[in-house]
Length: 231
Image 1 (cartoon, rainbow, N blue to C red):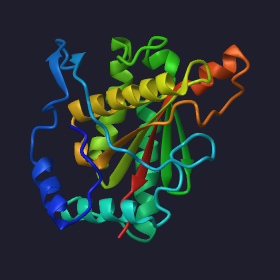
Image 2: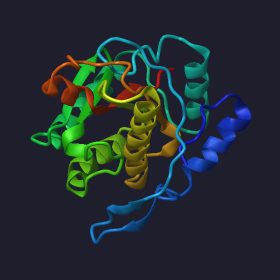
Image 3: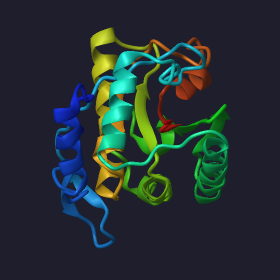
Image 4: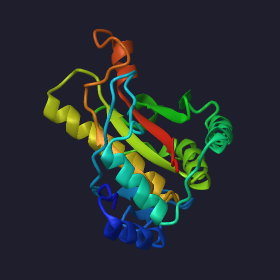
């Protein structure tokens, strides 16, 4: 289960216990011959803060108390924090690894300061109006998962977005379910669930013109934001 944001030391201890559990527990109930999930269970994700910018979950390290509590709990759970020049160097290495492992997959990797964002386009990840990951995307997402598992001194925000067609209720639900699907797959591949938060942003943060087919296709996406833990 993707857990709620930590609030106190007690939850930090619970997080520490969770980190020793099997990474695949509760994520998927069946696997294909390659260890990839084939049947997804319902997931309950945690709410996250999202900024405006270009549709990414911005401003998470702006000093708000919820983010600071989550950082402190993760550090208390044994996930080491970074400081000074080590932050940029760590993210430099992770960025290179992500770019190498997502080359020619359709996944776009961008950077804003020390934060990395991966854009997963709707067309290669989900069928229209669906929240089940396409099996042909497993290989691409495996490269992302292996990198995030290796570089574990980071928090991960998974945010689903839709185009403007349909009601807010439908789009909010679909975007959250898609974010949960991506988060669940990452967890099933070994990324610690305590590091992950999910959010369904619906149609609130377009990056292109919703009046055109091409623009709507760009707006239907899941973004993974990778944020370094700071001391």
